[in-house]
Image 1 (spheres, protein in one colour):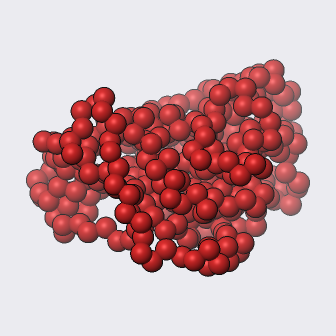
Image 2: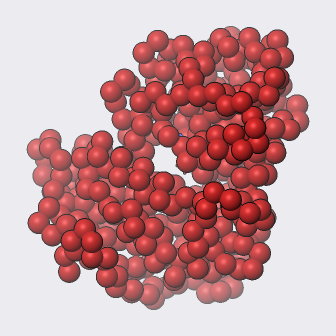
Image 3: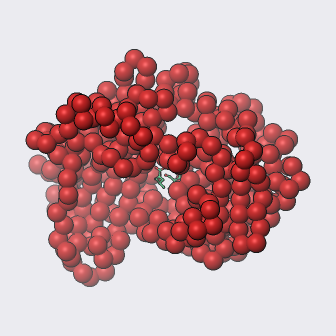
Length: 368
Ligand code: PLP
Ligand code: COI
């Protein structure tokens, strides 16, 4: 069952023999979902090797993967992933948001990590195949969604350090509520001064597991200092904002400008980020993608020139940042209400995603 680039993969659908009952599913979906804690009954798997290309596409029961202990991913971290959601609209239909952009980013990540490129159409099809069996797992509570986690791992059993010649692509899915405990309310951010997330010429612009492994220690430092996320600075001068551990960052100025760090080669190019830039331009806001010094943030909040700061990403959607803390300083007020511009942008984006506002950019793709 090998496939050339143009022939769509044929899927085998192998229903789970231990799927949760409708009552069990309803109990899970009506509880506090949080983020990434429960998973649907099925998953997608597609195999790749150098000789056959992509093959053996299956939808099958969610469950453990079997890996050779010498699989390259376990030794050299050759892994990439994506994050994308399915949204249930009021009429029951299920949609996703800009999946081609995630498929293209997965290809860029694959290129950086020398993993094989899954055709973008196959990426979108993998989401559709999973939803065809697990559509009942897409929650309908306000602002809830089904979070897909597509990922690719190097499976070749070989300890030489070179690009693996076999890989597996999988998609799992998790019903999701708010990423941050406490729902949509301002969070505090810890400035990491001792650790960088990415290096010049490194893998920061790729969505690979290693970047997140490197962020865990500073993230732990953030938690120890009462903050929910960590902010990283540029790895060269340690002066300019890059992004948070799992989100991009925006600043709103008193004069109406919306500013976000320019893509530096070490920042992940967020699809939420690019959508917000578009929505802000549509509103006639002045938008700047440029270097932003950490001192500009501190001074701007102190002087009132910067009126709002927010984080954005698929998991976090748009989350107000109330306070920035670091060694020996704190700016902002965690108890101040979420900013108006932040919440208006959040509303506009989620209204499109949930089908409450016209999809004027053609961002939505129907899955079911
Ligand atoms: N930056 C990092 C490090 C992330 O992990 C994410 C989340 O995927 C983002 C930014 C935001 O990207 P997106 O909006 O595509 O989810
Ligand atoms: C996402 O938003 O999809 C991410 O991958 C971020 C992660 C920290 C949950």
